[in-house]
Length: 337
Image 1: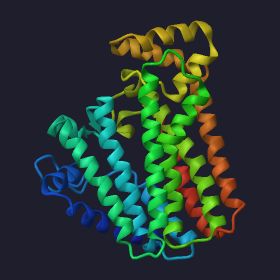
Image 2: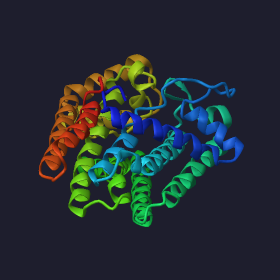
Image 3: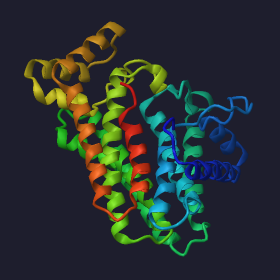
């Protein structure tokens, strides 16, 4: 993350990174090597790298969550490892299903090592995530694991819906929002609560963190969808117009389909078609923007960030810690698009 976190949280993030390396080292040598590449720790040939390995939003939330539960951030390290591994398990599988050839400015795992290797490495990550919680030493480990597994089930449900939507003639905005809440929002909400659950935090605080995380998760998906159409590849790590190239029925696209009949017909034809040159994709992006979809999505993201802030403000979480949570939320909202 490029946002400035407190010195104590930065130290805990260092502990998280060490714990992540130890978790990956438990895998079989092939899965460990592929994981190291996917996480940005090494080049494809195994050469160690100092490159950043993702935004770190979920582990940061898990560490803050432990603090909200009344413990040191360090107590949330197993939760941080678990949510980051589940997140990357889903990315490895998503890249295969979506046919994405680039992630974080580099070739995706399946393009280098094949589909079976990408799937098995994702499976290994999920398994080690479970172990991270079970071996945390917390008397609340089982409760935390139940939350993580329920979240993973929701995440998979969202991915199933996402794939189903690709072949459906009609998907309304509410259905698309529910899918996004499952596919993206569930894990961000779990990240905001898992540390608190792991340390035995107050149930009212857990509920407040869940409300914050659910709102943040929807905002995250809205911003991601904006970036997928109008984002700078230098920011997104994916080719320009990547979501349009993949014909994703994202939230802005679904909104545009519902707003204007002539534009909706043109977008429906485009979704049902195949192939499109760069100029054609830019015309589709302009058409979507002309329906108000871009401003709608940006406005909805801002509204959900305010909802996240209100959930914290109504809780007993200390104001300085609320401010740390909101730093993460604003980082999500302020990604350039």
